[in-house]
Length: 115
Image (cartoon, rainbow, N blue to C red; front, side):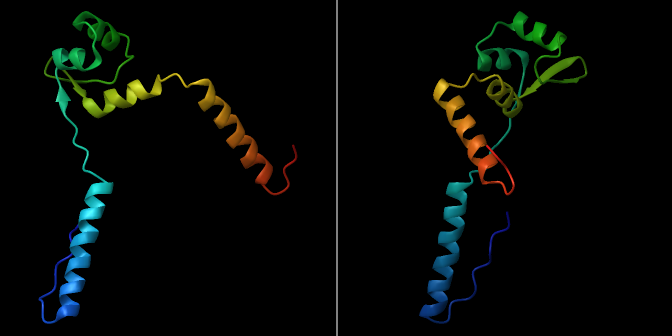
């Protein structure tokens, strides 16, 4: 994201404009923190997932886990591992009920739909 340049200050209005720019930038940073990805080794991935290293190798062999291979070494993206974990998340009964209700509401509010 590009940062806005603060114009030269000539009056109180210029100062207020500069303050608005800085506040806007700080709010944007707070609401959208930069997510940094890290490459993990097999040992680090095993520790991150709380699994044994042989289990990691087994998951790689079965192509059940996202990984990268370069020069006979395995690497794992921390963000991709988190996404992989999120995909296997089991939803609670309440979440399932809310999902069904939301789908029914969307269907009912669509023009020409019948329930």
